[in-house]
Image 1 (spheres, rainbow, N blue to C red):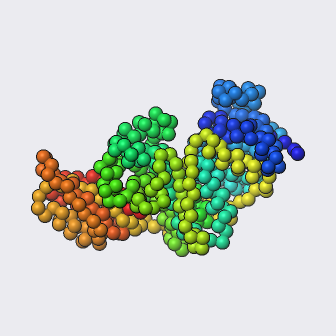
Image 2: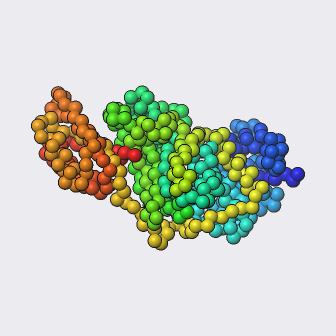
Image 3: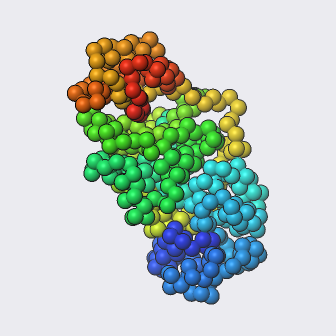
Length: 425
């Protein structure tokens, strides 16, 4: 049995997790998958990353050029993160005919259209199971398990940081800022959490997942995006009182040539399977025209769950011929495909008003005039400052109709402020 030598670029949490699995399960992989994988080179900023995981210092490689030129390296794993220098390094490897396994969702969302043609031209493979939803094998399922089905919808919880924060707010009744500090203390959130809490990470992932699910390229710039930083403890409590939990969802839909792609907080019914997905776990829910509803659930991040997906891709790359996507991934929305901006949803609206007769009626009239039907309404009165909180839950309505109504409501003399607007699944 020939030994396949591979390299790892980026030896942090995820690269180290993949290394652990490849070393500890080397004999198991050899015996069950018929390939002997040796980690032969590790590229990082310094040798300290290697010593931290007791990796042999002789594996250290300071140069991407050296890796690309090394004829003994069959495959390269990229876990550096970010766009540069990861993009440039991956291009070097692909041009050298070396297949690449990456966990880099931002890079894929922004440069998939550039990287895949380079891979195909040079007979190399580009693999990225670990880029979305950690150890959950959703990408392989979308690529290989539904060849006879049209996927109508793909949506779910695909960012562990925001799910942890919202779960903490729900369980402990705390405000967003307190839950964020807990997430940062545990390493779930970065010092600058913007990419996670403002929905960028989920938008990158939805670009990748939506492209695979709908067999048409979904540019990440077309994804409607709204984060969770405006969610309050009152919103969490109101959701619970109404029979919902709040989750940051990535939602993709295709109906013929009409496409939806959006990331935002959502009121999820307590009876829905996604409602019970808590802490840093992820879940993807999809519907196919013949297979029906399916849900994929598991650890969405972490050294070993993500490392497991990387190793799975590495084994596939070393034992099978590369495959290339048959839809056009040129960085643009396909001609003939229209993006739905005026999507339909139910809405939760929370408003602080003057506590006086007729306010609820005036707001209801504005909603009705804009074609928005009220499903439920409650009012909490009796505050010392003379205000009351009014909460509305609407039936399905167009986004633009609701936004137009809110603009008018915000100008009513009796309305102090619009506290929150959250869409309902």
